[in-house]
Amino acid sequence: MSGRLVKVSETEFMISLPRTTFRPGPYTFSITNKGTITHALEIDGPGVPDRMSSTLSPGASTSMTVTLRKGSYDVYCPVDGHKARGMQTKITVH
Image (cartoon, rainbow, N blue to C red; front, side, top):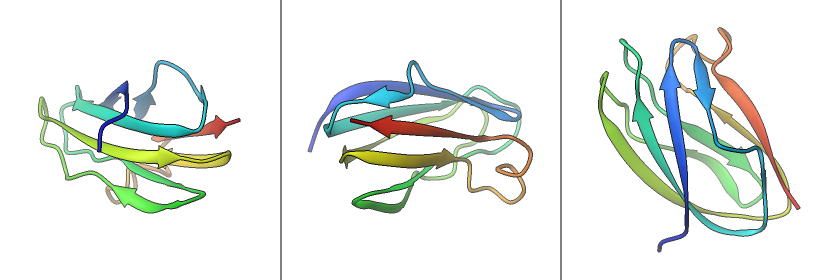
């Protein structure tokens, strides 16, 4: 499955997305760890229950494709303690 490309960069302790509102449909999140410690990306929302990328070493990249439905999604780093330190955001699909 492929989808519209969304480039995501992760650093200590922030997730950067090009936008936070989307239309329903398939999206491929291209994730790059631009930080100096290990990160990952998790998306949780309607039809996407806790979809997680592989863990990324500094400088590494990966991608994952999900189909977004109308609603609100939590996007965060699931590495221990990172979400609590601010590595989280929300996206809205409408």
